[in-house]
Length: 397
Ligand code: FAD
Ligand code: SF4
Image 1: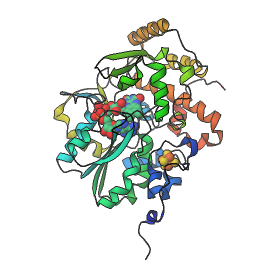
Image 2: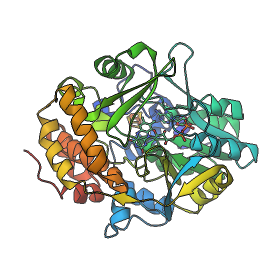
Image 3: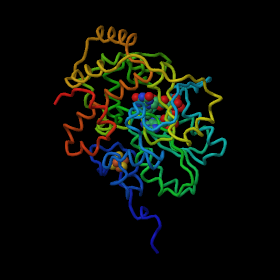
Image 4: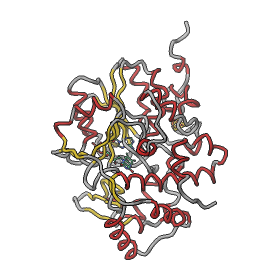
């Protein structure tokens, strides 16, 4: 008898085997399962298909003539929010964990794909299907490393679950959407976070060692809207390092090649996205993409303080100037970096304009990376919206 699931005949790759996307692999986890059968179509780095998958997920692709959609993807609504009672130890205020807990507690889903860390290493990702609020809470806070979240996909089919929530970053969600119909689910909910500049575990170590005063005690860090990296240490103390003081020459090779060639910063295919970069300092930024996303957000509305999104300043000149500076690996002396950080925080872009600043800086850098390292992929791999964004700037050869 032939199986209705052709993928079951495929075999997961061994952890040590080279992945089909080769050096561009983001270790999303798909190839750790028999869904590797679909890799040529599903992998975000082999077959970029954001426009088609937007239509499948949101019933339409983004309107490139609408400036907010061009940057932030298909959406019904954006807002700034924070939990009235933040979850201790969450990356920001814990909106992601709170939504997941609510969905499980109310029986809307039977399981939640999320990522805890291993016992030995707080930054080593360990994807799981959580079935209790405690397991979701244990997955709070970013694992700032490539994480094979989709490696648990085979378990879903085996468990017989029909309603599932998946939490993940853009490359994981692109592959997930491409195989969604093969999972045998009645309803899939997708809660995404933006993601940029991720690293493998060795790269993370190098980043911490070159940037923090005490790499071994860092529990959590974030590139924040005040143009500083904020490190939180075990003893509760905070260390800040201005972006402009980062040792760009040493850090150039730290970011994973997948992240240097990614154009899905804003997680276009999630139903609901929770980040921070479009919101004022201390607040989270929420993008409701479709009705499913709205349903998810409504579950925690009474736990949130909210305000409309705002936008202030003009990013364009700062982005244009940062392009050759990054390219040449210029590092400012620390006093100049601090001064520049203070000035730019006072007069620089805020709210949605800060998000555009970050998107522009990363897309121009990544466009140059793909052009130089994978010129044969450039045209098909860079989505139309990213080409338009990059086209606003003058790039070096
Ligand atoms: P929490 O309640 O703490 O929950 C965090 C959730 O993230 C957990 O459920 C966990 O399963 C999941 N998670 C953790 N690590 C990973 C991982 N490596 N892959 C997939 N899922 C993971 N937002 C921005 O606005 N701009 C950015 O530049 C940006 N960069 C990011 C880079 C990375 C690598 C990650 C993982 C997130 C990034 N975010 C960014 C999102 C932001 O940092 C917060 O994760 C988000 O605002 C949710 O905060 P929270 O307190 O609600 O999450
Ligand atoms: Fe496979 Fe994911 Fe790597 Fe692509 S990114 S090769 S789908 S593990």
